[in-house]
Length: 322
Ligand SMILES: *Cc1c(COP(=O)(O)O)cnc(C)c1O
Image (cartoon, rainbow, N blue to C red; front, side, top):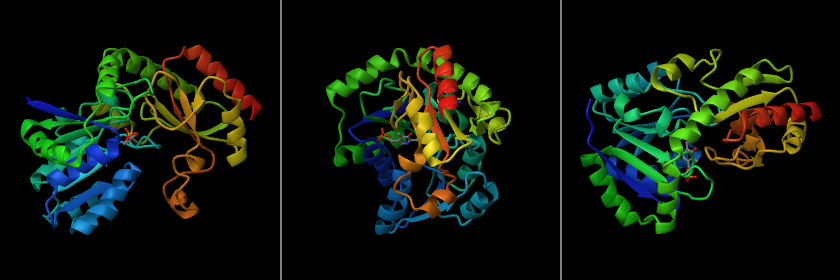
């Protein structure tokens, strides 16, 4: 399949610009957006709370529940299906080719947030998606020093989105654009290293007595492995895992780590670590966290490009100190 590709680079805030511009441009009043329950929280909030004020309906389906997705699409009024794949922080994957086929049968556009895969590991447009969004903040820029977003798709769709994006503002600054262009030159090298380190660490952690569960689509034990394997060429730098401890034990583990910075974000040269329950999902109620699988002992690692042995030794010593 051949695509005429276009893209828009947006900043300063990826979510406000890329996703909002895409949704406002493509969904008419009275439209209906379907998204998944583990998609990026700011997108979810925009879809549920802001679009509803414009008379746009939203339906949330479980990413694994293709039967419910089909039933919702059968209503015939769904303008756009929007999801992340893989998702954060559990790295769940959706069969992009399958959902694109199902959606297109009903005239529904498909938009994939492919940030966690990186453009190196997954190419949703070639799998049938209509629009792909990336947080360029992550793997594309790759150095944790710029915030930007990117939207790709056919010239026709991007023309519509670009008009909205211009109205909404948020043109990228020359500095940010320069840093992204510079980062792009090493993206393939960085991502290959991150893929390799993450897979090795995920396998090692899976067999560690102090680790209860590892979430990584590259692991054969992952429920999403078969889908990931069919549509990704690598599984990315994010590995999440549950440590056999409680909230404070995990804090001790994280504090004992010497290499990674404690921070949100992902995909850059430096490894980052965070505890979703008290960081990126802090704002959610205990009930919401439980529903979303955000346990107190969940750790999300974003592996950088440091030497594998150094990262391994650091994690092992920190688990001993926990
Ligand atoms: C980080 C992230 C975003 C938001 O991107 P920013 O560039 O930080 O605004 C959106 N979607 C996913 C999947 C992300 O990981």
